[in-house]
Image (cartoon, rainbow, N blue to C red; front, side):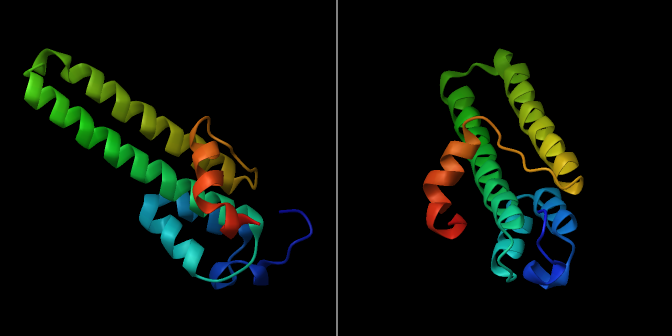
Length: 122
């Protein structure tokens, strides 16, 4: 973020605000900030990671629901709640650091983000 002007961010926002909004609104916020223009690498990283984190959250939630339904393991519903809470904590953690202007690389999610969006982040 250091040395980059607000004009190279989506919609002319400050970089920390654009990155924070990418996390605040989940994958949709990430998509808006990614296609909203700008070349700021900090904002692009936050937007891409937000998209990946949101999609992984959705996929894990669906898979967990299917597993519980098929195997009739309703007693493990608390595990699903803990998984959802883990994703919420990850979003809040990334959101706070993004608004502070600090880049966050979440374990596993950062590697997947780099693999999926590598060309966008270069």
